Amino acid sequence: MLLEILQVVCAAATILTGLVSLIFPTRVTGFTGLTPRGGRGITEIRSVLGGFFVALGAAPLILGVDATFTMLGIAYLVVAAVRAVSMFVDQSVEQSNWISLLAEIVFGVILVL
Image (cartoon, rainbow, N blue to C red; front, side):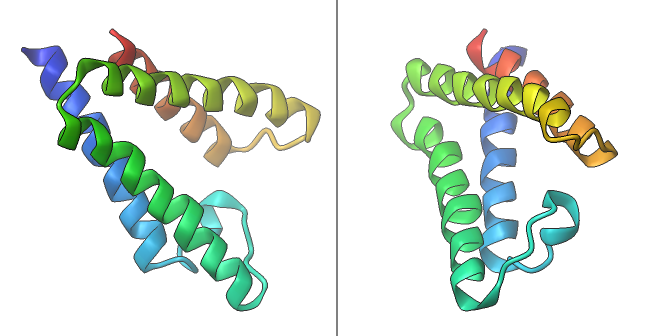
């Protein structure tokens, strides 16, 4: 029961992250390190960091299938793995990357259990 609640919280947090990026695309620049250039850049933040995250988080809640929570968890773990390598390859070992990495690992583990 607790695990199921935590999985719903992770999916909801994914949606919330997407909504913040969708509604306030220029406010995520400080945390993500992304700086949109013009309307095209803002559209990319809204669509990928916004819409895609909303869809990823909403799918398990709408479909109600355990495999969708697992899929979201796998996505988080792959993002975490790429981030971990990239932080050193790209010399971006920064606090915001560590925070993101930790969140991705925690969410990923909760969602695949």
